[in-house]
Image (cartoon, rainbow, N blue to C red; front, side, top):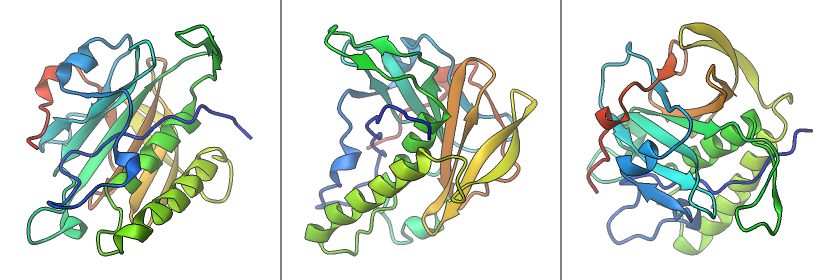
Length: 230
């Protein structure tokens, strides 16, 4: 079984209804919104390729204790939100998670060792991201965190067993090169994870948009992605 570092999931913009508290998994330590964090990364960012012509927006970057950017996400389609009359069920979005390829290394403060990142890391972040924008608002508030904890643990176990029966294989283009991804669907949406061509790992999740037929490419101008309005 592949062992990966457990990384905090990212917040989904617009994901908390007015008057409600989001589950703890949406409040990611070390997360920064806006294009500045993306510009300081030492690796390329990925998004959907030019075949996608809809709205593009930024989420938050995840950083290490020393401020080094480790991962981040680009959004496509509608920003996941419960605000409005139609609800999340009819919204269409796909989020691409880019994870820096890192070897085993010492932590920034020199007190420990950080495990290498892998495709499993991307799968974990993508699975957690999907959960953070599909948590059951109709559930009693006291039960929501228990539900999220249970589903997050399941997501972690699945990400750590990419060769297991919980995953199928899906080939999609990455920078024009056919690339095999690990793929799974659930009642909440879909998740996939695989390698990129630039020494990074790609994860993705979505709902209302089919993963079949998607393609990924390096983002040429991250400034073309705008942070969504709160």
